[in-house]
Image 1: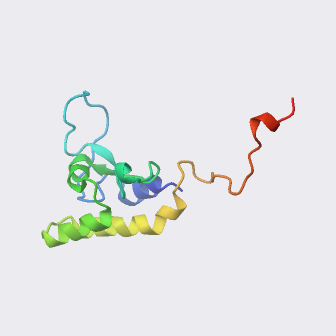
Image 2: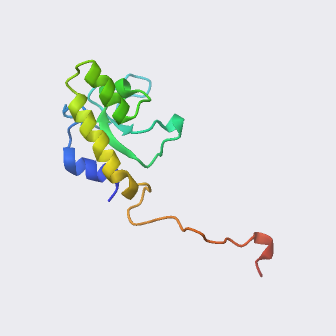
Image 3: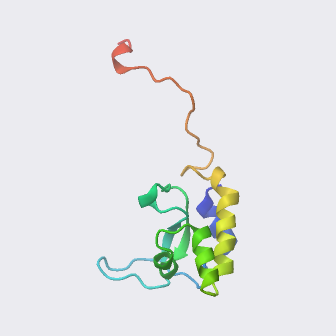
Length: 126
């Protein structure tokens, strides 16, 4: 099962980082999303080589606060700041560690072929 689906079963419509009930739907492009708007939270930032397939729904406020930190590093930062979200974010980091290897691909049960030789186009027969 995909990581985001497992997380949705675990936390339902609440942000796993802060517990606020997240809102979905549409908002007008160019405007700032409301703090409770659900966004994709990645354990490793895409800009730093993180996977597009490894994400969970978190609220916009937490996503902005997380910035490019991993959940584990962010949890430590929150603990030092005595932020109430620290324990929840640490639990999410642990959740990622336990389930990420099963969820590296966007389609459950579909894995890329390994050690497959692909014939060159110029060697294929008509």
